[in-house]
Length: 198
Image (tube, rainbow, N blue to C red):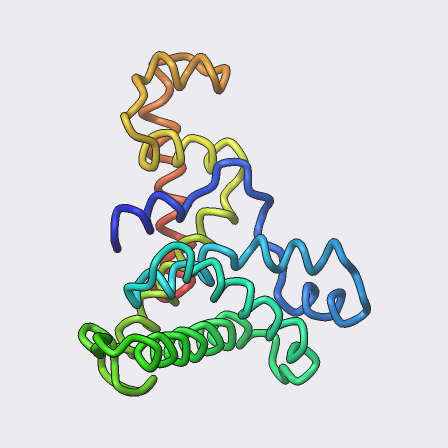
């Protein structure tokens, strides 16, 4: 995982992970809040894929919007809500592939370097696998209790690292308890990752 990707993996104030089946059901019934929750849950996943393909941040934003529009249009065709993350990844990879091809047609200097020839190439498979793992990691962190989510974010995703005294003060904890609580939170995270197949 790249430094940029790992920084985006944990959001301390993210709501607990909502069940994909419930989100899909609510989206299909027209719930705007469910749609917002769905996009919020998968925004890092969607955005990370064009970045992995070497597209610029502006192009990644365009891909993000295109993926969201396609999700909105095609969500009724999704047969298994459990397959939602893989489906989103496939949409994003497909969009990236065609966007890159379009850029190459426009630019006579464009080359296919660092870009897989087709979406089933080993490079594309690696991107898919990495995106799935990162989403699993995001989901595991988001499913931690709020204090653990916040502590994990402060300890491992902020730069520069904060001193324990500052973390303890912000969380309303005794500085000497941070190490113990950190270990309990990491144990919970490890259990969730093992349950997810890591």
